[in-house]
Length: 523
Image 1 (cartoon, rainbow, N blue to C red):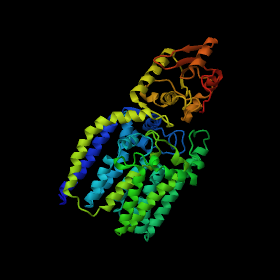
Image 2: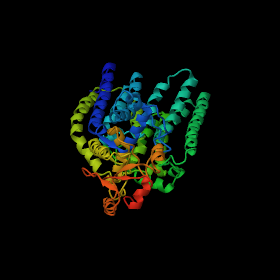
Image 3: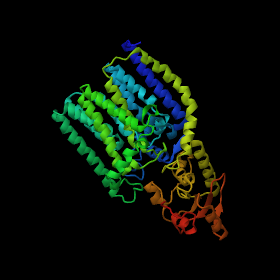
Image 4: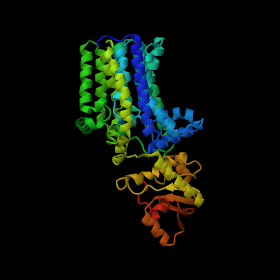
């Protein structure tokens, strides 16, 4: 039982684990990724569609001054051939999330570190299903870490200056895509300095890469500075200003920040302690560079708890605090792999393979309930997720009303407030960002007061707009306006509040505020 596997069986085990993780992700996509949509997912879909048509409108996600759209760019390569963004984007996101585990495992196997490869290949399947849900939503949460999949392969590049140039530029690019990769980048940087710090090219290329990264960020800032009003949801200096009180709060609530990020659904505190223990054992075994790198990565993760942006989120998988800690599973899996990298893989490890296969029917049975549980408790989030069929049906109802009215513009009303009716509040966002791709042929759609697409806002904020189909708004206010003799046509159907009115002498936002259909367009 304790005899080691030969090379062929070890490779078979590792590739089988990768296939099993693909099968698990396919189930997640079937039950969740392909059948549900969030308001941010819909906006990313619009970015991907624009890119597939050669339209690169903004440096980042529309209406933001952060979050480059690598996922949308990769998806755009397939959308041009007619593929659906609701299918392509979750697949791209899932691939990016799993790529580091698979890449590092294959690399380790090729270097005969079969136990390390086995650990890395099995880590995704050991993580909770909720981690799979988080990493299948196209939100820009995983693409920074995905770049780090190439790091071990770059270690053999020749000549040396090209190697260090590629390593340093990859680390910087990872941070530019999403700073939640910082713990991993910090750990890898510490290891590089401790192992190769005497190489002048490391410092030269590292400095150049940092300079280029700063230049890219500065160019993006200049782009937005020259276009005031484009940013609706800004990342402000206050969002990344260190606050000791927040650090203390974060440390005392580690479980909330690491929920769904630790294998076997272990709580976050135990995960942190386990990682510290692994780092200590690696240090004790004589590999101080790796031990220091792991401790440095963990320290970075903990210090990040002092930043307000890291506390932006809640327990919902659709807007989780733990999205900022997505590096933790990679660091933990890497730590276990490095501790056992020189050990031979025992034969009894093959037991994991049938266990993994038997896990798939359990996933089929558990997923619908786990998904519904998350849908039922998402009121804490500043976003919303809905079954795609529900959103599509609503869009179809709106499209039918648009055809009946012959309207020139559709304006979804974001009423009432998020704390009063979470679902109704975000129905406007789904209409604004999801309906254009779910129901082709719709008139232009403009979100009055919350529109993130600056070119749409510019085109439709001011009168005249002709006949406008309003979706939502206070039903009592609509009734009062109709009773007062306003020229408003009630087209409501299938539970969707729909009214058509002429807006040639008044802006659509002013129309809503004046008649009371909404009382705060910017809520």
